[in-house]
Length: 333
Image 1 (cartoon, one colour):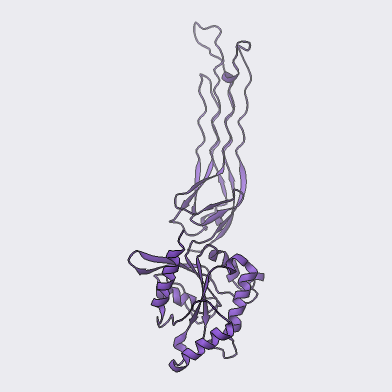
Image 2 (image 1 turned 120 degrees about the horizontal axis):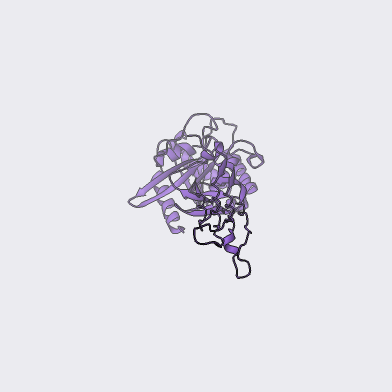
């Protein structure tokens, strides 16, 4: 299924039905009073968070959603039937602009547009001085809105790095996610989610987004479109390719560029806990690995946690996953 994380839709709640002007016309009751009923209220539009949906693709192509109008009132004290509400199902993690709401929990229900109330029939206007009222009111219009939908996936850990840093290989190695993996950049075109099971009842969700490049905050590459998916994570893993194919590429310079783009895009995202993961250790001779890691950390001036791994060879993963699990559990809401 195509991944869609932005959509714009038009919604319209139903109008209320008009009230009715009617008088009793029965045998042996020559001066029957008013009996016009009220109109029914219009249907409302509701949002419902559904964990079984993971993309907004349904709303990319079906953009107009209207609830039914209420029925008009009738004689014999009969009120009009209310219009049926409609319920729009969204993935958990959807932000709905205009109504300024976030759907963060399964089955969370939010009113998007209220249906109009029904109009009053002449039964409402009866009084001791107005025995045969001919007044009625039309129904009130339902609310109409244009909504922008934005999906931010809910993950505990986000993977950050340049294209081909090995993010997809890592998520495939530690979870059941099966992203596309190839030897060219920008293999990942949309976010991938994987559940990492560290032990019985110990797991966390990791999100892999398309790689960032320098200038991403101004729109270069693909990753900037998906950085919002990292805003709800509790921890960022900065994946660095320690053994790039091109000898002229400096991993330290690349890593600094990623951090700079992160800060430009969102200072709050830059301030999140971030750990350094030096990947592709299998591409470096065994006797050089320690020196290469130490040199990178020194030049990068990194003071936080650092892990040297090989996602492809699955080397060094378990100690890292244990520490991630402990951090996520300690910062769980």
